[in-house]
Length: 379
Image 1 (cartoon, one colour):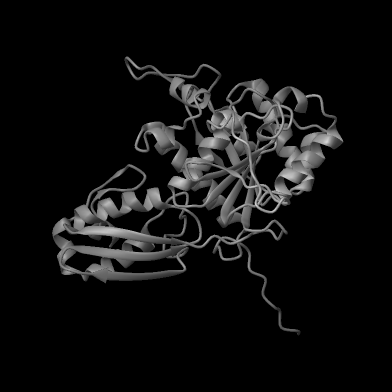
Image 2 (image 1 turned 45 degrees about the vertical axis):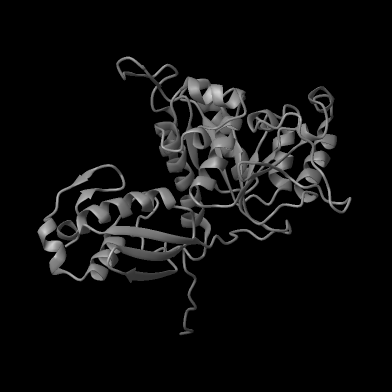
């Protein structure tokens, strides 16, 4: 039935052939309801209706507006679906999304819903760049997001956000106001002390400083707070992972064998502190030749894929080795901000949807994928 109702391109990019002439024979509201029910993707393994808390459909002569309440940001994917529906129904279809993200782990940090740690077993794999672009991509998908630089010894978030000379202020002398960069709320030790001073701190001092940054920042209402963890799996990383009420973690690696070995250590670290791992992001997966489009796997191929399979976790996405990502980071810019429709921006947005979807699918009690505990009648 789905094939007869829906034509054009599916949101995953594949073509779906349909009989467009059959669409008028069915009620438009029924077509949309069935499409949302039957549509499947990594973010919606049981269809969109299984995850929507509410749906209403408004029709007029010129457009159809579908009002949805969703538990995680998914604006980009639903926009693709709306475009396909508009084409098949010959009427503009718009999805009006209200986002209702809920905590999956209780904590006492005011205004912050879910905390997601972005980590790597070693430095040099693009963890901080991925953290910043993941935060911007979540904003592009409709969420309210903050980022906290936990890399006390080498804070790079200020420069990546173009805020190297910025300093936080306070309204009450107790809580610092986070810095703002394109709707992203940010806090870092780099805003407070020179880099050379932070690098000589001992572990306990660094841990206390991070605790203050987290708990003494006046965060606005945030759906997600991204924590850019320091590279490695030593005492400071373990202390921070135990100190912060993290809802879930993401591990960044490259396909290179030595990076994968360290990424595995990161997975084990989060297992020890009982933090769920949402999945793996494989960075620098390949290089695309600008002349011919050839994909060259400079650091190996499918290392992150194989690690995800071996560790029974998700591969959240594969990002190319791209000079524009590096240039943007050095200049305090982001591909998502500079060109929201570029291929790189779309890849980051897909990863952001995967991250937020996995947090919901694995851990939110509202998810149809989580286990239900039912009372057993006494015999």
